Image (cartoon, rainbow, N blue to C red; front, side, top):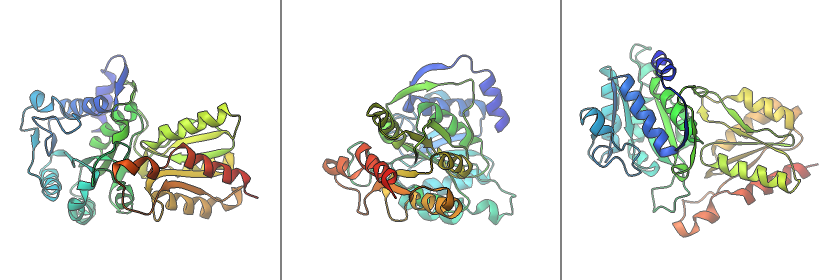
Length: 341
């Protein structure tokens, strides 16, 4: 399917000047379905309604309800259907409507989806891309704002990606759909309506590659998804106030992780702060901090710090801003690594 992406990109014409993340994901699904009749999109309300966030708007009308269709309210059933379809040669792209709704599907994902290719010694691929509107920042009710990435990264056999820009939203999804392994595609809800350039003619870096969004000299900020914009705001504020120069690394792919780009950046700055929404204990930042300390101990000028959410259940909407890590929490860590003896 990589060849399909290359052919589609070569004939895509000029890049769009601006597109929201929702529009970019919708376009990505449309183009993948147009390029390969095996691609199927399904989930709760994705058909006639076009999805809760209208991400799948128009797909059922364009490709028919046999290729974009609604399912019963059963997340375990949705992933079970996807596994069965993949076995039969289809390329399923199921949607789990919200991050907190993915837990009922946990057994199917961890016990079967992630293991099927190894279980069959590579004879049966699992080209399943599980789309999950993820993370917080929208003032939602309980079970609608969760950080599930650590569960999936910990599960061998799954790839895990999360876009930060509309351009990456388009291309990471195309790469995920083309991948023979299952991919957890985590969409940062808080950035759904943020617009940005989408180059339909030039593929973005593939799964497994990080990118440096802003070069800096003093501190490396490692982050992903919706908090890339937060890190960029902090870097701009620090520059405006003639503070530390922050290098912002957008991980994009959490599994596989592009540790070479991480290491190159930390080697240049000597200091690192990890920024993520999930709770601090055993969050993705813990793995990054541990690996940097293990492999780069003598190149560090200060301990690796983490700016994260708290070790509590996700709060009610009125307390969300106080719970989520923002510019202030990040800059506090930056100040501490700069002052470390």
